[in-house]
Length: 400
Ligand SMILES: Cc1ncc(COP(=O)(O)O)c(C=O)c1O
Image (tube, rainbow, N blue to C red):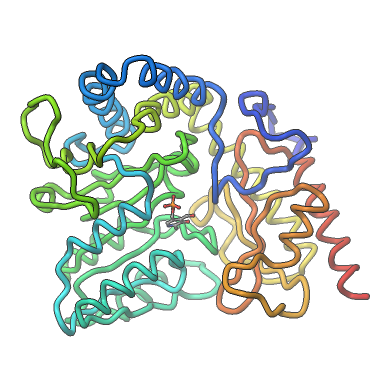
């Protein structure tokens, strides 16, 4: 079923093996890999199991270097500036542990940041006697200048670090990180970008963004295996950067030293997740990044339109690819605010998953409930229609 009469919809679901009967609208939390990437990873695992010495000592350094080259080309940065880590959470912990905050320093974040990231910096501030400050972004989001002004009006001469998402988690909005970095640099503020939703969903050009640190997972929109992420570090901060797990800190076969040595041998591990990153990049390029972005944005836009019709609520941002890509969040108060334990899913999320096998997060943000719909190449307009029908049914059910 076409979204717009003029949209040339293509079916790509056969590239994935999503569980039979499941409607998976949560690529943003956990993005499954296409079969081509899974197969590549399994090939590497078979090599590891058949000759561990050969694979771990001699082949892994070569595969990791190739993977770094492929990833750096995808992100438009120097391959010497990226280290592989298991995910964005690990990358962010490394940055928070390596920036030496002083008593009275301030770390500036926005009110759209991811809960675990808020915790990481809360802990770093507590350890150093520094303070976490939250800039409240305008609501709704209509201008990039408004975002920048709201962030920098919360900065003071004590602000050392700014932590900002490239695409936010609860609200799924794209933030103007290049402009934010340029303004921060003039003020001498370090910028750490929390970017796991950005690679593939939108163009990530690290040379142009020019941040100090970029933390991301490639197991989201890029569709690399689970447990693959990266940390980008500006050249001047590379030397001496330490992971949270101390291991050998050098190559196991006497290669020339490199700062990534601290990260690329975290003790014995399964490198197949990183070795398969280039196959994910190749897969997305074969589909065509333009095609991927157009089709998934069209679907997210369709979901947004239908959700706003259903809820009659104000959207979080203007309707534009400047503000959202393949994932969209819409305010939705499905019932009286339920009294939930920390981490307990909203009853609507549980009902959709257990009764109807639809995976879609219902997220709390600013004490209000929202639904977040993620669209990848295996999703279809029919799935959005099915979701809307069920949300309608839920609304009738709770109104009784
Ligand atoms: C904005 C943001 N930052 C960080 C993370 C953590 O990513 P990971 O669980 O891959 O470490 C997420 C996960 O959804 C996120 O949405």
